[in-house]
Image (cartoon, rainbow, N blue to C red; front, side):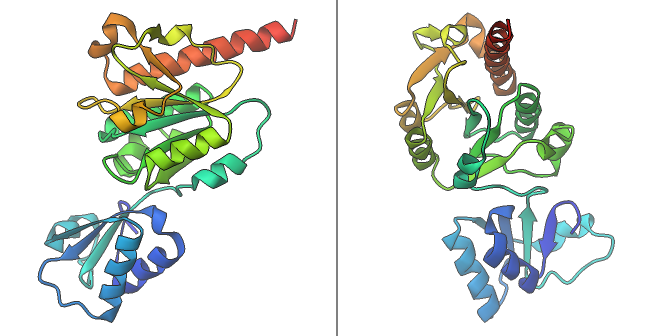
Length: 252
């Protein structure tokens, strides 16, 4: 594998069977004649809600030293393993868990920056959707400056369903909203498991996800001037500040 692509019917078929979450997108040669193995690849990709694109595969030659025989299919794969939300919830931790949820953040530079900030602020994981979200890729890995290897990233086919599961596991959900009543620093982050939801720069958080929030917060009048990675950093470091103050107080 080079540049986070794999190719060939058998390698991709085996990955679909064993670890389909690592596949971000499937590229199939236009007008390619499907045999039984290719039909099964498409079937498995659809079952796992993986985006499929029919295109010319010639553009992928630049990623390989020699021109390989793609056998009609190339897959973009994550440079690290995604984990399931159930596995994240099963991880034991002293104290409360802190999670970042990204709803429709599609820019790899913002995603990489958010990963880096999440690690620095001591958060325990990042949850993204399988759709309308930037996947883990080489650009995200580079922008994260290695932080991608220090925090679990959870990929889900249903952000709404995942939030329901978090709530069943004693998480409180905090969503950003420009016209929210409370400022981000007026929430007490110190005594609960919580998830901070951040939306895309263009559309923000979807109405469905906002309706599931236990709290909505704003970043005062400067919110519009911040991109999503900067806005995330403001909230995450406020949470870290509050938690650190409480820990120091308890040590006295």
